[in-house]
Amino acid sequence: MSDVRSLCRSFLDEATQADWSNAELNSLINAKYHEVRTMAVTAFEDYYLTTTTFNSVADQEEYGSSDSAPTDVFKIRRVELNYDVSNADGAPTRCFPIHNIDEVRRDLGYVNSGLSNITTNGANYYTYGFRSNFKIGFIPKPDKTGTNAIKIWYVTEAADLSSDSSDINIPYADKNYILLVYGATADALRFGQQAVGEAQDFDVKYQTGMAKYQEELEDKVSEEAKMIVDTSPIII
Image 1 (cartoon, rainbow, N blue to C red):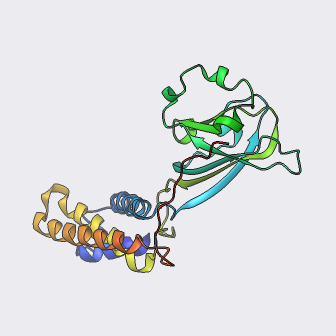
Image 2: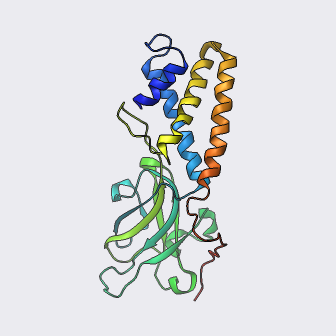
Image 3: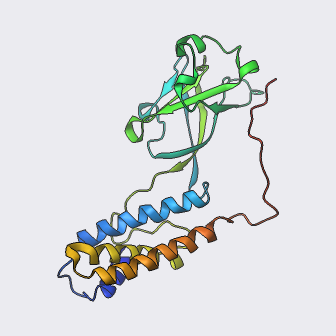
């Protein structure tokens, strides 16, 4: 963070703090940091993919932060639930998304009444809320309590760069951190319309750099040819 702010001050011709406080520049840098990080997710969704596991509870349909469900979910990529952890031969069940709970045409309690429909309809999950209010529900709901029975693959939200020593967590940060500098400098120069022309120049550098950045990220996995994957659930 401190290196980015120092370079911003160099472009602003303000080696010593005067017109822009450190706190103001930190806010502008963080705003661009979230933009640049989100662009990485847009270009290649799995850049920040992580996993977490937490317990299932017998006859409990929905899980939130009090159940150790994650609170930093940006995008969910995959969900599995082991309905019978105690069975050594049991395997996790892939759960498929319900994008809108209106897709469930009857009450959720009725749909969750048993596990027999897994073999015909598969298991499903739905979500709502975000951060501390994030909830994930399962259809059908588990009928057994299981340790680490639920596993989620998801893309995380970013935390602010909170201190001078904070690392910039973007792909190839040593090269691409300059995007934060260009963007934050443009916004700083725009404050009070101090240097609109110079701000536009830095905006052009930022936008041009972001376009090249996105293009470079699209082929993170460059082995073999791209292919189309059929993600339709298999009905047995």
